[in-house]
Image 1 (cartoon, helix red, strand yellow):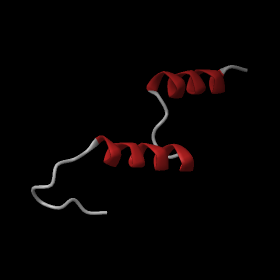
Image 2 (image 1 turned 30 degrees about the horizontal axis):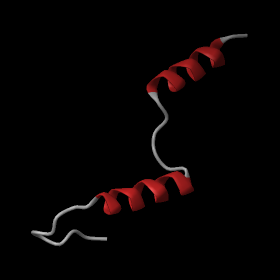
Image 3 (image 1 turned 90 degrees about the vertical axis):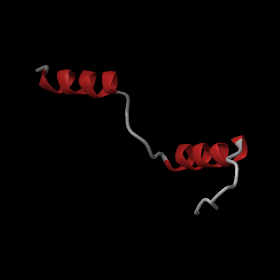
Image 4 (image 1 turned 60 degrees about the vertical axis):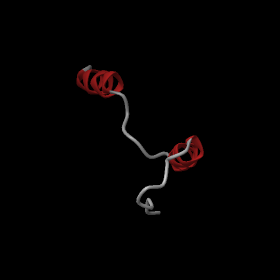
Length: 44
């Protein structure tokens, strides 16, 4: 999808992007979770 020059972005545009990202599990994990996972991996 490409933005048309001069066209206003609408909340609908963002909601479609968020819905697709949630549906396919994309996106980064929160930093606190990554840190916790790293610490727990070091725990015997």
